[in-house]
Length: 450
Ligand code: TRP
Image (cartoon, rainbow, N blue to C red; front, side, top):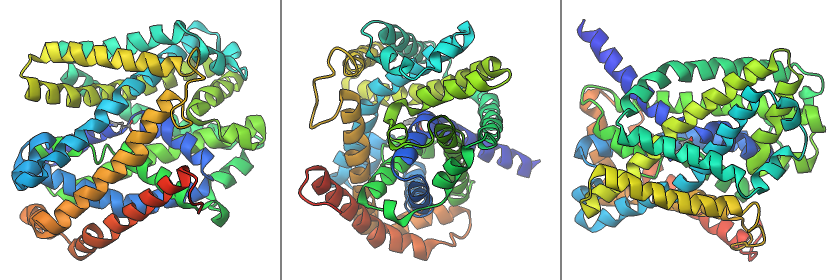
């Protein structure tokens, strides 16, 4: 009996953390980055970074949360007063991500609607998506539906129910993604895509690939933004941190890899893999998948199922991103939860509208060459996440010392990888992140090209 209840407690934690981690990052962001940054090269870099950096940071954050039993805002400060700013810096990321995450959630809602209404054929045409996001009014309606739904989940406190539901729907999503990737991979012409996706080409390995993979890794696993510290603070003292961390990572990576296997070969089937189609960026999933559904037998039903499940994964994540911001506002300004939720929703709506206009009436407005959405994405994922990740490593490596974390992990038995952990967190991770960050900023600024 004892053992069984421990097991389900641990499984509960892993599923909850994985439920928050699996979202648009896996299904929408990973495939378009992989397509853009050389397929196999990106995949290889991503996996190597996941096993090393991802693992080390995931373990660290869960251990900090469990040790301090505090929110990220306070956790760093409680370990060392001078470092409380790092907790604050980490919580800026959800603030930047939230508005555009909900905008894309709105796009997913629209596509679920398209599948349900049966206009799949039109949606499969090349410029359907571009003309949709360029409109002034329509994308905003879908965006508002999504963001208001997110806020209502928080206000009516149905998060727990949603979380329970997502434990059924997440595995369903996994099964459907497997089935769809098998379908896509067996289409004529998909072979070249599979090869592009799975076979790394050394030519494509450059510092931008590393930065994109690193930012994506943090984003997808909700690392370097305080989220896993919060989850860690609920983690039972009886469980083994490093095993759970590995399971969350494996699940999250598996979903991302399958999403890529479903989308990238499809790009080859429908466009022969021309560079422009591969570089589509944020629109890739929305342009490619309707073509797949349009061609399939029972494509409409499968399309409905797919977008509804993605919508679910997106809602569970947007709720937890919003929660993180709301909790910060409540802490800092002492408002009620509902007031904070309304304020955060208003903020999200304003910034989200700006992001949406960035594809239409404001498309001439660029910030250092980026659309508004791309700019927020760049600052949060390519700058802040690596920066917070690096600072966390320095903080643990030299201020609180790796031993503090290792001791916390070893409350539940030996941590076999402690030598590796210490080396990574003190030297390899911070130095490499520093190198990747600086060289790609120089590269973006046009000062250096690697
Ligand atoms: N990891 C989530 C995804 O892959 C996105 C995300 C970013 C997130 N920050 C978060 C989820 C904070 C929950 C909480 O889509």
